[in-house]
Structure formats: structure tokens, C-alpha cells
Image (cartoon, rainbow, N blue to C red; front, side, top):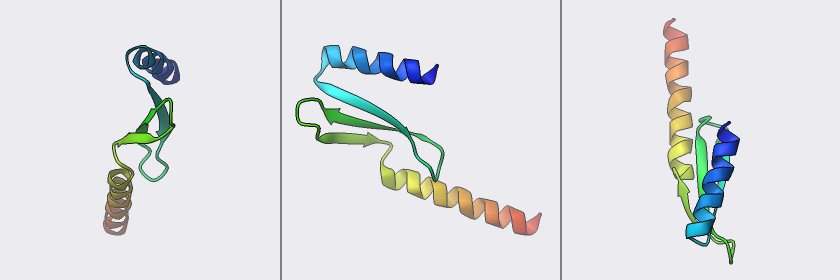
Length: 72
């Protein structure tokens, strides 16, 4: 269902703007990441959220897991 929503959103955005949306799952955090790119050049305009933020989220989750595993 999420994949169909992503495809529908991309089609609607392509009608309005000349952009592509690429949805991926960030492995470290498990969060959805969206890359917005210019359709004609393929250049990535923006990543939402940024790769750095997702890496930080993944590391914080890992640290929290270690702390609670050692105390539990």
C-alpha cells in the first residue's frame, strides 16, 4: 500500500513539476528516505530527511539499545 501511494505521489508531482521522487528505506534507522531529483538532469535536489540525520538516528537507537541491554 505504501509503495502504491509513493508511485501515485510521484505521478502527481511529475504533472506539476519536473521532478522525480525516489523512496528508499535507510538501513541503520529503518526510516523512509525520499530523494527529490530533477527529471531532466537526474540531479538530486534534496533528500528528506538528510542521510546524516538518519545515520545519527540509527546510532542513537544503537546506543540506547546498548545502554538498556546492559542495565536490563
